[in-house]
Structure formats: structure tokens, C-alpha cells
Amino acid sequence: MTPYLSKSLLNNYRQCPRRLWLEMQDRAARKQGLPPLAQAVYSAETLRRFVDGHVIGRIAKACWPDGIDIEAQSWVQDEKTGERRRDLSYAQRLTQMSLAHRKPLFETTFSHRNLLIMADVMRPLGPRQGDGWQMIEVKSSTEPKDYHLTDLATQAWAAEQCGVSITRVALLLVNKGFELQTEGDYTQLLGLHDDPELQAQVREAQAQMPATLRGAAQTLALRHEPLQHQPGEHCTTPFECPYQAHCTGNPTQNSQASPADPTAPVPIRLYNDRGQARARQLLQADHTDLRQVPAQTIAQVWNGHNETHQINRRLAQAVRNGQPVIDAPGVRQALATYTWPVQHLDFETISFTAPVWPGTRSGEQIPFQYSVHFQVANGLVQAHGEFLDTSGQDPRRALAEKLVQDLRPDSTILAWNASFERQVIQSLAEQFADLAPALMRLHAQIKDLLPVVRLHYAHPAMVHRPGGMFSIKTVLPLLMPRLNHNQLEGVQNGTEAQLAYLRVAAPEAVRREEGYTEAQREREIRNLLLYCKMDTAAMVSILFVF
Image 1: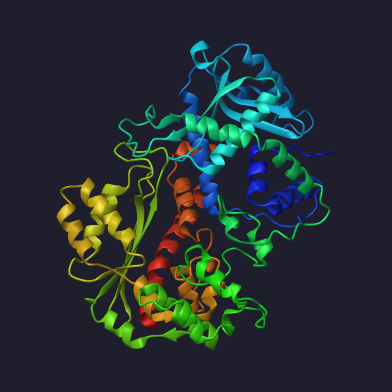
Image 2: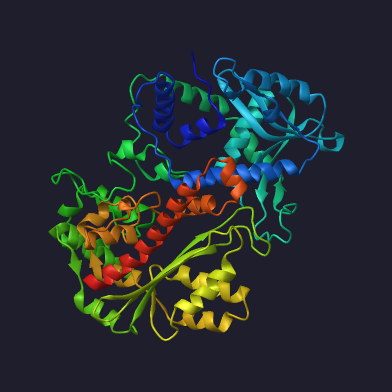
């Protein structure tokens, strides 16, 4: 039996046929109770995006209060297992019956051949708009993206193949800069985009649907994994592929280990190489191992005097010699500008597509946690301070008050990629006029440790790291092998911290309904504190080594 394809599966095929093949093999194995050929690993960022999408979907339905929700009416209870599931056959029949009511419809369900789609919104149009229906795709973005067009094309094409007249299409997107005035009032959050250019682009994409379906079907008919589709930039565009670990051979996406085989070629990967232009230049000259590229060749490719060129010459030197490179005089010169004790600061923030607290904007970074380590000139830690709000209320005021109590305005405040910490403090100062003078005094003391490391240190293992070469999660275990964010339980990156915060700060009634125990909450609070503390402790360790 040929499996159904969906809008999401077709987008996976467009991103990479191998991803589609692996996902369908994974599904088939689960149905049979067998281990998958490749284990899908969804990042915390992907899970957070799913959460945002569900929230925006609920708000979109409120735009049409008289609408008919096909999904809500098509759930049935399995007589054998007692579990609730969607009856997709009934959903299709209900869709056809509901079309006659000429009301807005949510999650209309159509199938054509091996394609099954559920459309976000369908709105009936009057004679002046060409009668028929408008197909609306709801997205938690502020601007149209390429995959939005193919999503709309897939939905509209399938509905038309089932005899429905789709005379217009639209995207329902988030209005950039929306500020919540009254709790729960999202009437101005979403805006309809249905300009003539969008109509033409979607129609053009619809014309490609038969070829896309044929290509996807041919991929699924393959008996063996299509290995000709190798890892590349498409692995993270438009979304992160959950099978990257399988395709690259890395045990986990966050692995800090270098390749097990020391004889394996070192990839031609360089820092801030936009579009991999210079890497391609080296590959076209038959260089396949960065260790074997002569210093003279690197000097010719990276022959400028700006920071990127200097960093790459140092990085290539580290790879070529198999040893870290440290510019000790440069480090000492940078450290000489600090006022001690140095205060290492790190914020954790969260943003909401649909703002939660009045006075906050869509996409605004709201700080809910910080950690600060105080380090004296001999490298030892003098003290540690921290803040974490779990009340579920707007955390900014309490955090700002504690921050001005904890930090000294006469000592250097160090951050990693300090523009972020500066922006957080600037925003707090703009929000709270009475605290602004004290906050801006702290703002003036902030310095950035990241460029100090980036300009004066390189390690040969950096080119193997799946994330940023100079992220703190990359640099820390290279300088201090026994310290690694992967050792932490539950929270190992910023997006995981956001998801944990959503759980611990949820109302008690919600936690109880979800079966989230107080013991689980206390454990996640501890994990959040340890994660944020790890970031500032990492800066302490890096400074101590330097």
C-alpha cells in the first residue's frame, strides 16, 4: 500500500529526498515495532517552533468565531484500545458536507491519489471576489517565505483536485511589532497577505505539483537509501533536518568529539566563509583536506587584514600543525583593559510570537534568568549570584531590581557575544525609568570576551564542530576538556532552557492537568540554574586558562 504524503512530507522531499525516504522508513519501522534505520532527533528549537505554531493556530481560529472546526469534530475513540484518534475518512466526509454551509472552515481535509492535506482555513468568497473559496495558510512568521508558497500550493492544488473552486489564496502572518495592550486580546496580532504577486507565485508553484508528487513517489519506491544526497547547507534550510546525525555519521548533533579516524580528511571548513565561497575555491583547486593546504595557499586565499582573514589564517595553522594556537601577548593586552573583579554575566531570555504579558511585543526578548560570577585578578572566583523567576508573571521588574543589587557599576562586566547582554539591559532601562540610571551604568561596563578568544585562539578541532566554531559550547571543552555543556541534565542550550521555563512557570492548574509533578518542577528549576551557571563558569574557566 502506497503511504499518504502530506504538505509537510512534500516539503521534506523538496528540502532533501533522502530526508523523506528516511522519515517514511522510520514510520514503517515504528508501525511494525522494529528499530528505525535512522533515529530522528528533533532539536529543542524545532519543538519550540511547534509550540508557537499551535498557539498561533488557535488565535487564527478566533478571527472567525462562526467557523466550523473539522478537526475538533472528527475525533473518535478506538473501541479496542480506548485511545482517541482522528478519523480522517470522516473528516473528509465532514469537509464535503460543511462546504455547503458557506462558513469559514478550519482543518478541511482532502485526499487526492496518495496526497492527504488538512488546510488551516478556508473562507467563502462573495461574487465580487470571484465566489469560490480562499485558501489561507497560517504561519507564525512576520514575512512570507518560500516554503509558505509551496505549502499554499499543495493545499490549494489538492482541494481543486477534489472539485473545490479555490479562487484566491492568502497567508495569515504575524504583524511585526505587535504589542499586547490587554491580556488575551490578540485581535491585531495577525494580518492577511493576499496581494496579486502572491496569487501568481502560488499558481506557478501549483503547476509543479504533479512533477513533485512523481518525484516523491519515485523516492519512496527506492529499496535502498538514496546516498547520492549528501549533507550540505540544505540540511538546515528551511528547517533543521532530524536525520543529520545519521547522514553525517556524528553520534549526536551536539557531539564535541573529533572524528574517530585521525587519518580521515579534515573538511575544508572556514570561519565566516559566506556561501562557502573560499572553501569552494580551495576544493576547485583539488584541495580536499585542510591539513594539506599549504600556508602560502591559505595566505593567498585569506590575504586581507581584517579580522576574518586573520582568524582563518590562524585556524588553518592550527589544523595544519595539529596544535592549538594562542596569541598570548594579544590576550594579555586585552585583559589589561579590565577592571577587577570581573563580573561574568549571562542572561536567559524567551520571546513569544503571541505576547503573554501586557506591554510586551511579539518577538521581544524577555529576560527571566541570569547568572553572574565574580572573578578576581588571580583567576579565583570570589562569589556567585543568580536570579530565576518562576512565578509566570512578567519577570522583568524583579530581574532588573535584583540585577542592580548584584552587579557593581565600577568593575568590568564580561559577556560572551556581549551585544545581546547590552540589548537586554538597554531594554530594561527603557522599560523602567526609575532604574534606568543604575542599569545604564552597568551597560557602560560591559565588554565582550568572544572577540578576545576569536582573535587570539584557534584549535584544530573547531572545524569539526557542528555548531559555531567560536560558540562558548565549542570553546569550553577545547580549553577545559572536563567541562562540557553535554554533561548537564535536561537543559543543555538556550532553547531547552526556554522550554523548561515554560513548564516551571506554567500556572499550577495547567501543571496539574499535564501531570507535571512538583518533584519534576523542582528538578527542572535546578537544571535551569545549573545551565545558566555553567555559561558564566565557562567564562571564568576560559579567562583562568588565558
